[in-house]
Structure formats: structure tokens, C-alpha cells
Length: 356
Image (cartoon, rainbow, N blue to C red; front, side, top):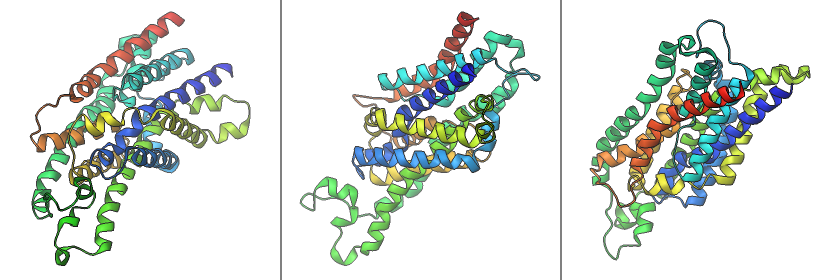
């Protein structure tokens, strides 16, 4: 029972680290485009993520089952010590990344930790390499490329709309006001109705909320899947019977706590240091991210919201042919993509061997 309690604590620590590192990714386009203040965008991200996490109770079963097994050949499962090592490695790496302002993928960190622990406990021959590659690595590697392509395509298709939008001219209004409402510079007889303008603004908020909801829906089942066996070990039958729902609820609350305490730290990186965004490109980046993540979750595809959100923002940059900037976060993001999985696998393996 003590080991089960310890395992649950480590999982909740990982969820806390996930919330602190990931909440800004869903609303970065909303803040970066000038539609919302960083604080308002962050608050939206926190509560939409919580709603998505709780939504995983009825909708996240397929993804949870995938992370509950499928890494090893045969019927072998990780020992409690190995599972603790995997989770500790992932949680430690994500927490360190938040402190260093690196936008990393918790999904990558979790997979790396599990694979490293499995290799240390059973050896490389017992790891289901083909299954891990097909079920985990291929979706993870494909998702940012799909996000870049989708966002780039949406932006190109939208160019004719932007060409017909009222352009800012000196003396028309403050540039910040034009960003929030481009119709303010149109002649009075050409302005759309107030309702249309409110819908235009609401779409941005809804898109940012949809990305954050999708992130909670996709990330919570991955972490809570490892808590369900721990809750089943508790002697109270009521706790064991409610294991899946209780695990998702506790994971969602821990993720929300991390988002509230440290979630704003990474917002400037994605909102300002990857690509300059207008309200329209910010909206399209969010739509591309939400479509991919919401579509992948019911199918049980473990895409990384981090990679998809960053890929959508990079798609904005590609479509705009934007040159490197003075403070360019793209190199940091790409480096984190390559480093996360092997780093957490190595750390997890070391922890298993030290504890053996």
C-alpha cells in the first residue's frame, strides 16, 4: 500500500509539472496575436484544460488503455520501483524544462521514462520495439509535420480574406485596436454589424479554449493510466471501484494546480519568440492544433499537444517566410524535441539500476 501511495504521488507530481509547462501552449496564439492579454489567455487555458481533463472520464479510455500497456512483449509489467523511476524521470525533466523555459513534451518524457525503465528491468529484447514505434513514435513524429502543413495550408487559403480586410492606416486608430478589430478602420457604411464583429472576436477565444480543452483531453489519460493499478491496491473497495474516474479527476486537479502556480512562465516563449502573429494567423494556428489533437484522442493516437501547437505556430512562420529573429525560440523547441525522449530514458534507466 505504501508503494501504491508513493506511485500516486509521483504521478500527481508529473501532472503538476505538465500543467506548469503545457498550459501556455494552448493560448500562445491568443496572446501572441494581441487579441487577449497574457493574463486573460493564461486564465482561459487553465480552466479549459481542467474541463478537458475531466472530459477524459468518458472520452479518454482508448488512450488510457494504450499507456497502461503495450511497451513490453508477453504479459510482463513494470515493477512498482521501475514505474516510479519512469515517472520520476519524466516529472523531473519536465519540471527542469519549465524552470529553464523549454517547451518540452510530457508525452515524450513519459514514453522515454517507461522505455528506459523497461530496458533496465527486462533488457532491450523484451521491449516491443515495433509496437512502440508504430503506436507511439510514429504519431508523435508525424503530428508536428501535419500541424505545420495544415496551418500553412489554412493560411494560404485565408490570404484572399486578409486582402479584403480593412488595412491599418496612420491616423485611423491605434495599431493595437486594429489588431483586435480590423473593421474599425473601415468606412462606416462598409463595417459589418456589431454581432459579426463580436463573433469574430469570440472565435479567437473559442479556438484558444478548444486547444486547451484538447490538451487536457489528450494528456490526462496518459498519466492517469499508471495510477489506476495503484488505486486498485488500496484496501477501500470504494476507491478501487472508482479507480479510472478517480485517477483522471486527481490528475486533472494536479495539472490545474501546476498551471495556476507556474503556467505563465513559458507563455512569452511561444507567444512572442517563435513567430509574429496577427489575429487571423493566431486563429488559424489554434484551429489547426485543436483539429489535430481532438481528432487524435478518440482514436487513441498519443500525439503531443506541445509539438502540434508549436508546429502550428511554425506553420505561421513558414507561410510568412519570416527570417530568424533576434530572440529565436525555434532552435530551443527543435532541440527539446530531440533531447526529451533519450534524456528521460537514460535518467529512468539509471534510477532503476540505482534502486535495484
